Length: 270
Image 1 (tube, rainbow, N blue to C red):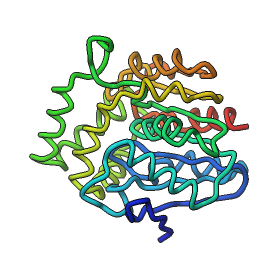
Image 2 (spheres, rainbow, N blue to C red):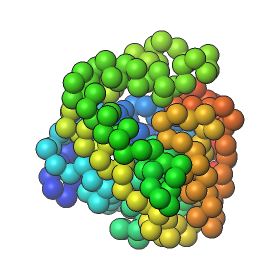
Image 3 (spheres, rainbow, N blue to C red):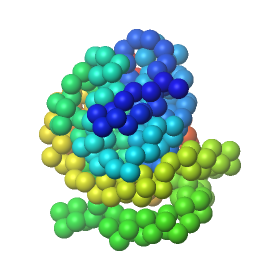
């Protein structure tokens, strides 16, 4: 397996497809790089070099006990970029992966990056607070952690039905649900739980570092990451941002709206 070593020695599994201008795809929770299958294939086929890696603790990467905070996770992203010698790259973060993009832009000064995309991203601030009333209550996130520790497979089975909008949309197959559950169960329980703590980080200060063209895509029926405190807020805060709202789309629009999401990325990267 192709591996890159992070700063603390953690081995990260990396896919590197095609040639051309690089695009780095950063997956959501609790999935891995395979979740980008549709987009990665078509981006590489269109002439891009596509890099997708498994976050530490997930997929085929190593499962250390520590390092599930965004400073460390953005350092992991920097390790991938540096090891592959990427320049003039685009960073594309989905859901939790938007946090790595945001923290990389501030902590690593956007080194080697020309464009960024936040897809269903948790940035700038997911958690409910007096100055963020539309965010997710901390109690809800704590409840998720408790359910994971009690019965992780059963929790994730129900989670993915909300993730893909089952009952709202008819385009998701049972195969996609089973595939997603398989990816999620490859992760360590420690990583799965601790990353929920990381979601509570405030990325509003990080968005000041976005001085480059940025694409924001979010589903209006996202029941996992509500659009108002995240996608819409990010588009307001980033001067060069373009917001595309997918009317009625759930969180998992990379699968439910795969062709549209892929085409929007291709247009943005052109």
